[in-house]
Amino acid sequence: DLYEFTEVDRATNNKFMFIIGFIGALVILNVILMSVMERMREFGVMLALGMTPGKLRQLILTEGLVLGLVSAALGLAGGATLTAYLIRKGIDYSGMMGDTMEMSGVAISTHIYAAWDPHHMMASAIVAVVLSIVATIYPAWKAGKLQPVEAMRHV
Image 1 (cartoon, helix red, strand yellow):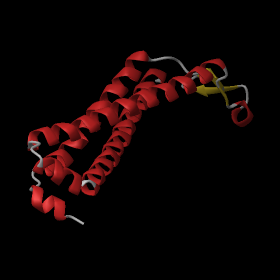
Image 2: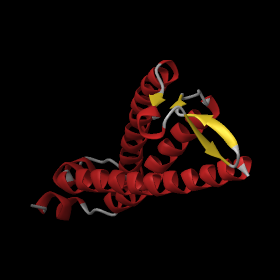
Image 3: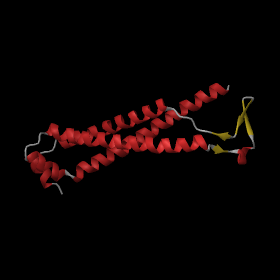
Image 4: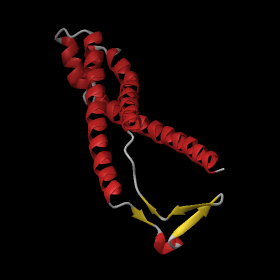
């Protein structure tokens, strides 16, 4: 029963992380799209000076890649710092539940410690970078369709 509870908990956590990832992708999409909209004149000048739409798309996709890599690095650093603390100190629930709690007939300590999961950490970082790139595709496509004269007139 305890094993099944743990598996259900893990599946629920994965669904929750998917929702958070989707929200993160929408935030990245918003940031990159606003960046493209605010730099319309700049892109128009670049196109007028001879930059190809493909190179402009590549520039914006590179910005999305860098945003994803920096975000993943900061997330890994912050997560590793918090995990290191929770491995040493843990979280003490004994004030709320006493010294032990019981689940399916098994006594469980109310002082809970974190554990390293490098595979999950790297998978999360890779998914964050991929979501960042995917969220950048639409703004890059939109910028690649710009006409130089119309873009330079954009207010």
